[in-house]
Length: 68
Image 1 (tube, rainbow, N blue to C red):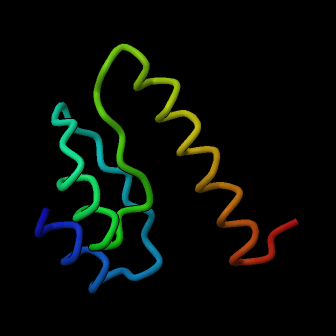
Image 2: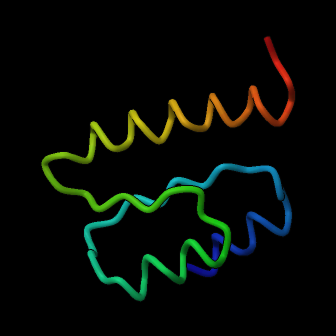
């Protein structure tokens, strides 16, 4: 979890997608509070969630950098 805040301090514009086998609410909230863009629980559905997160980062990048 400490790595999330360290990366955000170094690269504030980074999209951090946190993938874990732990489904704890506190861990999720902490990761998001530290700057994680997405928190994905590694289960049978995680590839779908990861694909969605990656698509959202692309959309966010277009908004932030105003790409066509």
